[in-house]
Length: 51
Ligand code: SF4
Image: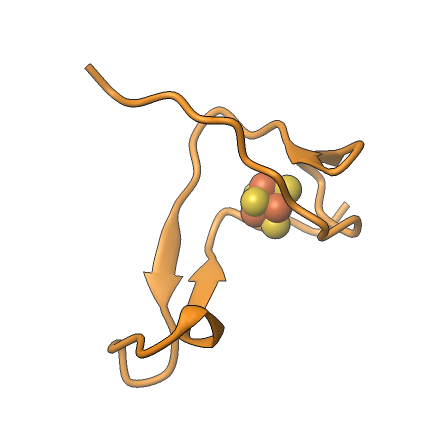
């Protein structure tokens, strides 16, 4: 069974953002740049959609 979690987010320009939480049904996060993340700066929300 897929895990469910509460996702706090501050990206208020995203279509899925509401009151500091993500309301997307699914979330995809990927490494940026060369594809190897070494810190949280190297990760990115792929689900983001401009509001
Ligand atoms: S899709 Fe990503 S950027 Fe958009 S509200 Fe959810 S976590 Fe934030």
